[in-house]
Length: 367
Ligand code: PLP
Ligand code: MN
Image (tube, rainbow, N blue to C red):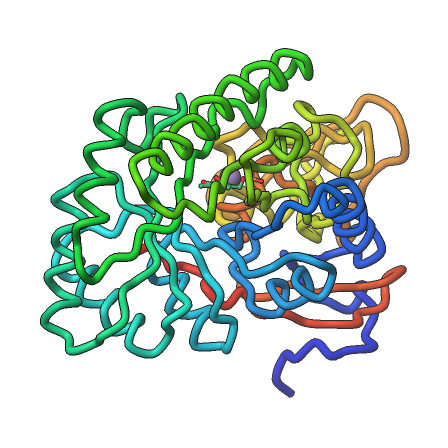
């Protein structure tokens, strides 16, 4: 018989490693975000780089969000083909192959929004759209560097020059500005995170105003992540926030922003081997838990994880109940987005009973 977990099964019957979601905790995270942010009137456009899932995009929209962000064009292709079309692609689209793909995506889905941070990038898209026969312009935001120094044009003259250039292109319609303060998301001190965020928001909203003064209709000012959205929404002129990780959280975010949101996603793992009186080997290593933001943690306190390679990890402990071969543990990822990208399915359960199974639709879509 093929291995086919079903709705109604208990998570105890799942093979491991498996990515499981506690629905009560996930729904509470959604509720908390919505009740904190929606009353401000700001649009919530969740970043789907975390979930890579059309089903979860729909759940977030049902709870009050509007549309979604994706990081990459290939994520947009997948999520859009599943019928979820209101998408902002938050990374620059550069290179002939990607521009060609963008034109084909835009042919099917006119709701796609893009960001640009260079004249050469904007002109390449304009030229390709010009040749495509599509008569509608693509909705475009200027990507502004508010201090992350990852992408984005510099504020002031360079930003104005780019806005003028984009506004002069026939096949791009300038509608807004994006400025993502990713360097602040994990700042430990809440006051410091807040004040630095407000500085970034000043750069962002002043740039939007400068564009307006130049005659452009700037409707969208989009920014923010899980660690800063609560501050961004207090700033007049910000119209939209893009949090993603809040849905599931991870140990890195929990250590920085506290426990307002809960860790709702874990990797269910099995003890394969006893390697000493207080040490076992589990079936979760680098291929199912990423380590760029530190090591995953066992949900049950007291068991310390370390990586034993691609397929294995170890848990050791000082006191507390012994772990033995065939026992199961839940591991909390240290960085949620790249960890999800290692798995095919989410098994969503309530008190252990599987209620829903969601594919990670855009898994591996890194282009
Ligand atoms: N917006 C952009 C442009 C991002 O790159 C990210 C994450 O990297 C987010 C929003 C979402 O941030 P978070 O997952 O920290 O909530
Ligand atoms: Mn991330």
